[in-house]
Amino acid sequence: MNQLVTQGTFQKELEKYRNNKFNVMVPAVVFDDPTSIWEPVLTVAEIDTNPEAKEIYPGQADNKFRMHGVALNKLANCAGIVFENTQDPIKKLLPGLYCAYQTIGYRRQHDGSYTAYTATYALDLKVKEEEIRDAHTAKIAKKYKDKNKEWQRARVEYMTNRDLVQLRKYLVQLAESGSRNRVIRGILGLKSEYTLAELKKPFVVVNWRLKIDMSDPETKRLVTLKALEAQASTSGPVRAPSISNPTPPIDLPPEADEDVTPTDFEADDTPEDLGPPTPQEEFEARPRPVKLQIIKELVAKKGYDMSKQPVPPDKWTDGRLNAFFSHLSELKDKKK
Image 1 (cartoon, rainbow, N blue to C red):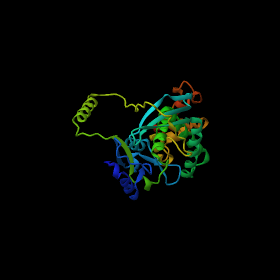
Image 2 (tube, rainbow, N blue to C red; image 1 turned 30 degrees about the horizontal axis):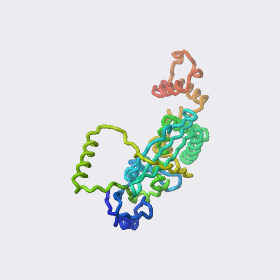
Image 3 (cartoon, one colour; image 1 turned 90 degrees about the vertical axis):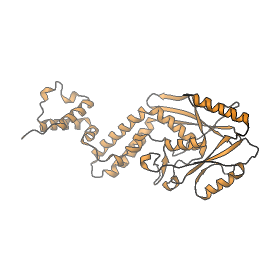
Image 4 (cartoon, rainbow, N blue to C red; image 1 turned 180 degrees about the vertical axis):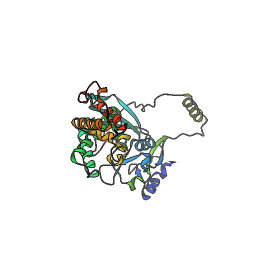
């Protein structure tokens, strides 16, 4: 919901929202200037707390939640934040293992000027691997208490390796998302984590737009011309605002407990959501010697003729062992 507010009633409107327990993402004091050609627009945005909407996900603290990039971008659009990357935003020090990404965000102020904010987000997969393994170890031990330690370790390794593959695949995108989200949080003064009750309260943000006197024929003609030019444009990137005398951007420091907004694979495939592992997953998580023993037992159980295989299983790759286990599992047991 957009609401145009006159200069004289701006503070009154803000106070009304604050008194109604809204999340007001506006500076505590904004000086009214009747002569200004810029006018404030207040926008009320709601965060969808339904898990299926994937706008929030569990935070590190108990009963706390964080906003996905979808929710953060919703607030950024309401506030009129625009972005640009630095000339060389991607810095891969170790291909596939480390990536740093820098983003600059601009927000218009009440006098029409822009303030720039910059943030860098780095992903080190060596560090992430330790964090992922520790998290899975704790969750597996809690959920599968009836399983022995060897099974739990195998399951942790399987899930850790699975998550690391996804992190390597989307390394640059995650680093970019992390730097962008950090800029949004810094500009709007958002906390890294909220309670569910806090997130259910609407967020109020302010944007500033040019005050145009449409009663003037020449002004109306120019505005109409610009609108027609914009309509005729079929494509083209949205550029950051041009600033004639740019000031050094404000560098936003990282928060101690801040993390990149996870992609779907991180948010949905936690141990609590996976359910019991399938036989195939259990097999793939086993150490190689255990895999060979299982294959040997299955061959005898199914009555499979190993003479069809020119190379013995102990010479096979893990991928071939996994595929052969899947094939044997589909066969009927040998008749006794």
